[in-house]
Length: 191
Image (tube, rainbow, N blue to C red):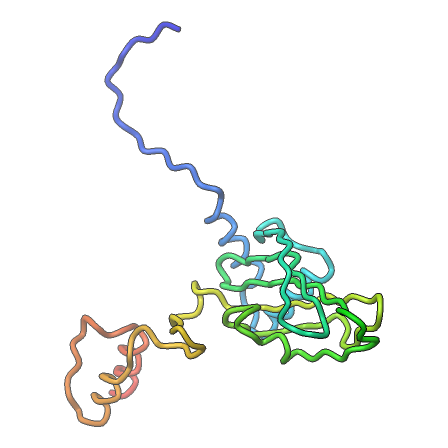
């Protein structure tokens, strides 16, 4: 190889995994849909295996021994980048000598299984010997939450609105650099 040095302006080249493209595609798929329909659409797509390429799928085999009657296996996690949704697909099967077990959605709202659950869907509610059921748990990810979690289960707002409440009741001025767009809009609406 023979090379001749030349003066060329420097360039910065960034290699990405296409995350931005995935976010844009997902936003266009869900544009104009209310939140409940977004969740239903996401569950339907995972259930029917009609998953768009813009979703990120992580296959996992993790066992959960949370219940005495059933054995849960986390099969995969589907992330919908840009929408802040994550779907965890579990497989539930009977454990031990139990001939029949009735499941309900509330059973799967446990912090050992998911963080920030917003929806649960069961393939079948009654498990019999030799049967298995798919369980879909949708959770809200941090990119759309607007709050962070404590060590317990209670969400905490990142920006406390106490100063805004004091402003409305006490007519004190709030510094403009700490106000969000919604606070400015509320102030303008009050005028």
